[in-house]
Length: 282
Length: 134
Image 1 (cartoon, rainbow over the protein chains, first blue to last red):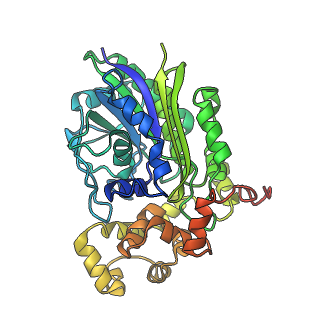
Image 2: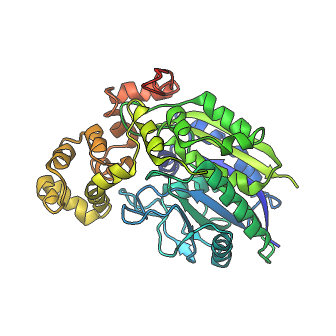
Image 3: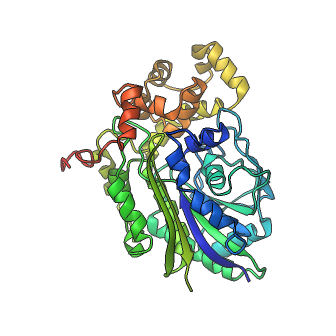
């Protein structure tokens, strides 16, 4: 039977991908950003921790979805996905190989569980999905596991509420439990933390708020479910809303988790980088 | 729990220096943002760079939107329904990074803006709410 073993969250800043691709990770500016992922890269490479499949929750940044199609929750069900050309050529990273049987199973189960999921076949995946893979796995020839893309609209308002994201995570957990094949599944939530990329208030960072959010992923996740959009906007900048995607991961892990690792650094480009690894406890 | 959509949207106008990408903005900026998406193709970038004004003739945008695009006035473009991830196609075509383009909206030089980020970013103190002044 498939089982969820752990949850990982991380920011997915495009400049982090560019720094990796251009060999800048040892530069003084970037070194502390990447240092915080070294623990996770060792951890995830161990046999006991290596996932067979990652359900990777991310948002598309006007790459696969333009203003003609804005799915709130979409599961990628194709065999594979190409890295997107975001205007400066595709990132030099491996093709994203899906576990399409498992992805279709998730989509079917979530729909029967009353989540109206959009099913996507042809879709390129942008930095929102590929930067987290690079951070955890480095620069391999092929990604070491299958990846199910789960795209969430956090660009056009309203995005789903934090509570709805949490509940989708719970539905994903039920779907995983009903999958007969023996798979180790991780759920990753990406995006955040505080950042604002637009207007005169751009550059906003709220480290105290971010750290409390990281604390409460274990200490008080019920508080996180109830944070309204307006609080993300006021406290963490207009793009901080991406943190609702972390709650899909947290909802999927169930009530008891243990924090294994945490990393927080300001800045990467315009953004506060946050990263946490949570182990599911039975 | 049903949310009152008018109250939900009204709160967004109370955040200083921020344009939340609401349905109203998405409608106003539809062609502006679709134009920006067209720059993801190399052949379109070439045509745009060769003659920006001529390229814009193909797009049913308002004259204000066209003028703001030609001026790269990103705050004005946000007011006219542009979304930053779509506008990113425009400044990427110009060869600008997010930091370089974003800094132009803040009234700071790129160097000042970058230094602010290295120093921990812009504090939320005083820029959470216009009405409450906090």
